Length: 175
Ligand SMILES: [Zn+2]
Ligand SMILES: [Zn+2]
Image (cartoon, rainbow, N blue to C red; front, top):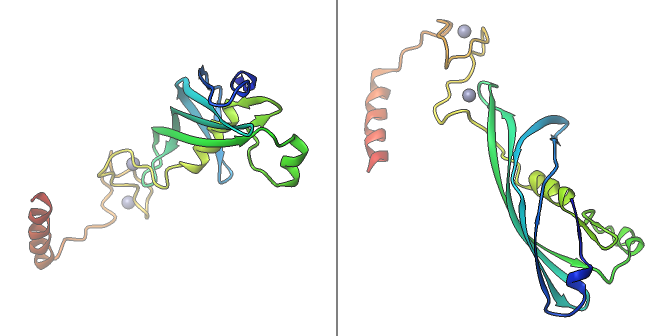
């Protein structure tokens, strides 16, 4: 969705609030495609801070389907975004290109909300996704999902001295 920035540019100090829908269907990160399963409207505030500069703040939440880092089952991960940007509207599009300005979400006098949210998603991309805190992952030998089944590939027992240590450690954690 495009938001016209002219209204905020009319006078210094002017603040404009807007709600914008997000129309992102998928995210490509590190060469992989991840479907977007839910979006929420972005609440934007655009403030004219003088000298044709705009301060753009907003927040939203985008839910992306990402495989669990351990067992590869799909997980719907809500990614909360909160951003604050400054856009120099005195710069023309050709100035921007020359200055290698990465604000690709400013198109003429419009704010391209999807592009802005998309770039924020990449910046806030989770480094690790777990379907649950104690996901057991998949067996590296036979590929069984160890959350659903046991496979008997590894029958290692914990050394009893280590078990004692683990017990103490767990108690320590609880305090
Ligand atoms: Zn998992
Ligand atoms: Zn196995």
